[in-house]
Image: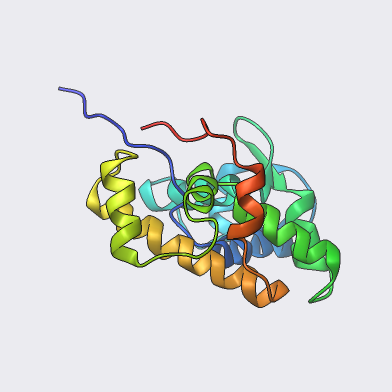
Length: 173
């Protein structure tokens, strides 16, 4: 019997995903490489559940470009990695990355003024969006880390600007 796969979500917060993109950039610069080489840059020895979740998360934030087995560090990642702290381009790239995972855009739209308690977000994720409890907890942890990173980088909150750009149908259970 096949199991139903839940909606997609990044397994890492944005800070960890940026760190992974920087590791790949430090190893291969802007050159295109294979997924196998990318995950080795991150300390994995082979494609497995953990390495594929990491690869998926870095992609969901828009920090990797490429299709199929080929990847390279994206222009967004380069702006975050190379631009000086506090520069408008770096802040914009961090904000765009934070809003890229569809589930984060949905949460920002649902809670445009303030991020609520973990319990409130978990209930929303489980009851309305079809996540299981384990995934909901992981999402909340990654979301909070991401929101904190945006606040640190810009002194601003991402939830109020994201409500303008998040389509209603971006997340489906």
